[in-house]
Length: 335
Image 1: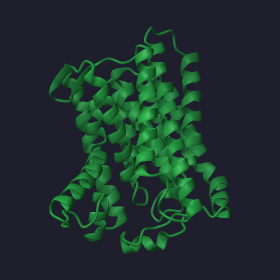
Image 2: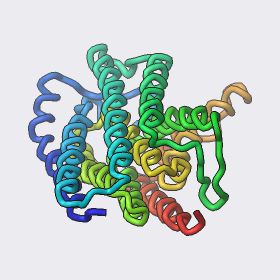
Image 3: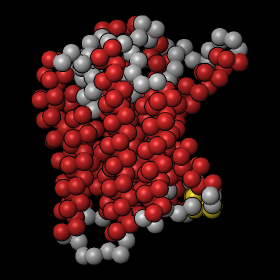
Image 4: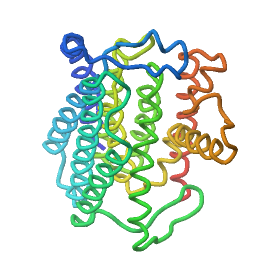
């Protein structure tokens, strides 16, 4: 891995994202693109009504620029590698997926701010677009010969899923995109968790010798750093679905780009916990005719309503992500 190229990716993404806020926030305020807060949510969130949203545009600009520039830097200073074509395809197809997912989020956010309510695209519309773009991504990987149906499950073993690999892959893409989206509910939460994940993946890619994926992880981490400049508690801007869905596309790109998609369960353990809490809450609610396991889901709201501060929850979830990432890195020893 070209460490200098990774440093370029981190610095460019963080600086472009942070500086972009000085331009984007005034524009969002002029357009009155403020967040609508649900009345059923935690009472402390009512004071966030009207906070500018769609701030994810900051890193949607910064991260792709950082990836392209860092890749060109690496390509100019690296001797030809027979694997470079495959890794380049994984990197750029992953970036395209993230941008397409970001476009879904942008449309959803735009409809919300125009209607001035907390509803944009319907769940079916979002799902249809996610399936379409996910299928295109998997097709591109298949056509380019970069995808194998062999799947390694951490600490368990490697299996050939055959044709069922694509069923698993599509399910994983949809589940992960929604899981990342659910995690965006507190000031700095998704940015902090994803920053820790990106550091874990950066080490992971270094050990695997995957420079292109290392650049993606570095750019993602840099984008999170730049965005946290504006999004740390108390947040001056929210990323909106524009940012969270783009971020989910980047995480998916790292999961499949490394060729070890199951490892994201460890690196993204908080995403799994978040979406798991939503599924459990909904199923239990229906089965028991109105009873709840958690005070509110996703689970970060349960902790919030149990008396934990936003800062405490963010730190706790970041630490859990670090532990999960460490387990993911250690699992390489068993491949």
